[in-house]
Length: 232
Image 1 (cartoon, one colour):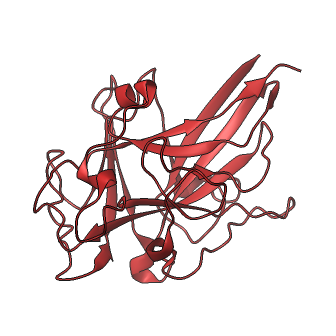
Image 2: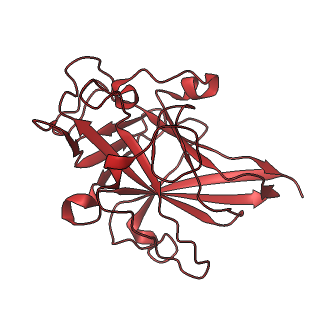
């Protein structure tokens, strides 16, 4: 009995699946450690900066780029995911999560976001501003997710989320689509049953409120996929 989870990020293309256009996807290869950090912005050097992702003068705005670095790996990696919403793709980054192994998934997987892998293991509530939010955004997480896996089994294309979906993301542990991500208090559950060998597609948004960086700092976070499986 085993379960392998591979994660890929869309760095080019137009809503094409991993199977249809593998060259448009970049795998995040882990060697026993979690992604070291995920940032909002264009040119970031520390976890305390949003840098080129300047907060808007009022309200909220999408970060133009999500940058992922893995300095904990033997070969440091950096992946930059452009925000296609700035050119008409509903403001989203896309994450592909692929399941393989023996046995079967016994429940729908979920996508979570945490301050660190240690906090995820200990179920310690996030305190970084990225997920704790600000006064200006009513303490809402800046990290949001929407399931875009197409329900039609013979179609490999992705669905499109509603326009500006990230403005209506909800908080909590319910099974509805479109969620704020914040530890175990709010996460996204897959919207359909998945089997080993299938891929789960999730649109991501990083949303900056006007008062980001004006108080509590900390914009580093990690994603965690939590899945349960059983031998058959």
